[in-house]
Image (cartoon, rainbow, N blue to C red; front, top):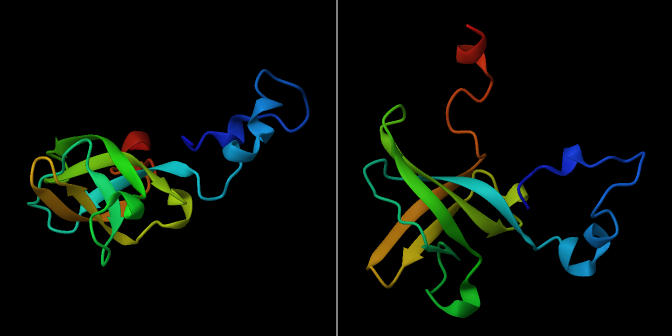
Length: 126
């Protein structure tokens, strides 16, 4: 779910190998960790918001995941967030809604990778 599948050995046994074969854990619709950026950089994101397809109504039946955390990024001059989205690894670039009916929030967000800044490591390696 966190995108760490490449760390699992294909050649030797390890704790959790049998459990990861369970049907619910290999379901292609299982929520995967994704990054989120608001379409409008001035829009605020809120933790706990639920993800809904952009043209769908805000109901529990249309819920596709939720935002786990968010923060303002001075480097990007925008809010950014992380969350679990159904089939998230296949949906990068898609626009969805982050609906927060309890606090009256409804923001259009773009699904991205979890690396928001210097994804190629150019700044790190100078």
